[in-house]
Amino acid sequence: MNIIFVGKYRGKPVRWQMGLTVSGVLLSSFMGLMAVSGYWWGTSSGQLSQLADVEKELAQQKEMINKARVNAQSELDALAARLGLMQAHVTRLDALGERLVTISKLDSKEFNFSHAPALGGPHESESVVSAEFKDVLGELNDQLDSREQQLSILEDVLMSKQIKQESRPTGRPVNSGWTSSYFGKRTDPFTGKLEMHKGMDFAGREGSEVIAVSSGIVTWAGPRYGYGSLVEINHGHGYSTRYGHNSDILVKVGDTVEKGQAIALMGSTGRSTGPHVHFEVLLNDRQVDPIRFVQSSS
Image (cartoon, rainbow, N blue to C red):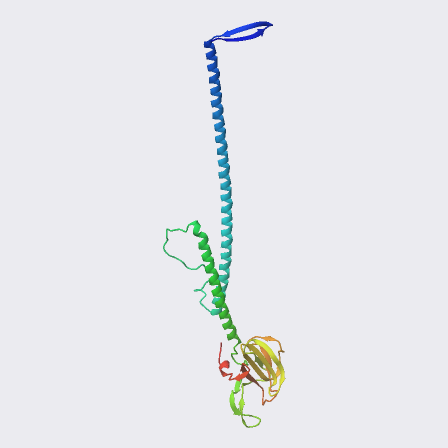
């Protein structure tokens, strides 16, 4: 088979005839070139596709790493906030503990809340995994809340007990002087008849100080029949005290007085035979024998 090419060259017709062998060589060369080009193109396309997949995977991994970093930071912030709250609870518990030690008059060396508690024990190799860390912190926080509530209740009980003890009248209503009459039946110095004396009399130098036997609020400060110039103090919890026959009163109604404070000066006003203070203790508005309060030192 022959292949004939017809054309013009410089205006003249040209004819070129190619034999079968040459045609085969050219055709084979063309086919080879096309195969090589196709292989190169396929290889290049495959590499580009693989590169794109790698870049996409890297982008996904980078996004996952960023999310993990953000989540880790959020977890750390949450743990830091939880630890800060727990530290605040511990601080309050320490303050409560120190007040309770003072109120209860416990040994401050044994119950020293300014130092960490003494702890010890053998080391255990088992560690708490991170998945359980939040649960451990939550349980510890609940325990701290429970302890705080218990200490608060104990503090209220002790404070109430202390207030009740402080409101209880104790001691003598004078700094100096002597007991001239006791609570109970006696011969009345004015009528000579046997009558009930509902207080104790403390005689002394006129003008000497009459003092409050407990803290409280003044509910009477002035003349009163039978008592002369009288001071009455309400101490709370049902207790009140009266101080009669004063020459001068140093407080007024509504004043808050403290134990040991001078409230009047000893005199002999009212139904009296000489300078003294008539002292009464009332419990729920009833006079009781003051002797046990006078002899009490706490």
